[in-house]
Length: 478
Image (cartoon, rainbow, N blue to C red):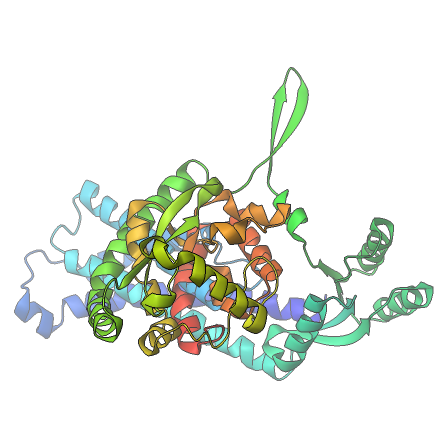
């Protein structure tokens, strides 16, 4: 067993006792707070609950709570990203307190201790997050010092392979030390590769050469299997597009159907309800910022302050897309500016040819002279995107999903690019938290395709929580 695997097992084993202590600590803290003089003075106790009886019930619910954590995937051996873990803890803790509330309601127990229920939820969520944060930081500290690293062999010299090698060397917390990079594959490469795995000088392999024949790729994988090395490979958009299948047997003949996304049935219903509730909350919270933006834009360049353009949505349908106008009116292209559309489109084409920093169907103009000073500010902080919450309420957008592109951009998609039209576009997404406009279009499509295939409520929460950090970091904004 590799050192990395032993490290992961050790930290996974520690999760159980630390979570149990955190949950018992939460129960005791809630009880102590409820019976403290400060709270009793505000909210007198009408029904006394003995500490012994309370502890007995607490032990049962700690077991239930930890079972929910297990169902939420919080005890997997492979460590999850920190923000994904926090999102799952919040979901599982909320489900846990709902079970407690239901039990109290139907069991007629602790009927006057609603304060304790709320306190248990708050303390449990906080204590579990603190415990897992401590483990997360301890693991990162070990990895930062090279303890527990996997010794990685990289095969191929694609752009993604080179980026990963740079990433692993600059950020040791990823847990990989690149011990060999085979840029080209040959008989001598295979011999050296086999010897390294056999002598345990390497214990992990990353295949990153899309040009290798299937037979060669299978042989590389077989050698890794022979010496029990971890094997990874870079997925391509086509491979991920057929990763979900459903088998139907009709008349004894198995028929395989490829599924576009997990967002079918209840998944779609949940996502829509989540979108509406969160969008309403965010509209209320950001309304002061939107009002200030409207006033600033009006003073700078008059009306309209909301820019409406046609975008391509789910299954290729068109919808009106709302943003705060960040360009001077005389240069704007949208449904409100049809009179000057021809001239402005011609100007945009010239700017793309001269200043675009991205190739492919979706260009990105750096130092765009059409952008106003206020527009540059609201773009930098993504304030221009706040009106899209109203698109979410209408049902045109989701909070999380692929980017919504213009029809003239979608017209230049390759066939595999159209995969991203399988679901509603989103305000934010994996591409936005992974580099925003600095990503190549193919990388953006790969991330969006992965999201479509692996959607879950926890993933949406992770992306939403990570989005403000991406905005503050400011990478990829122009």
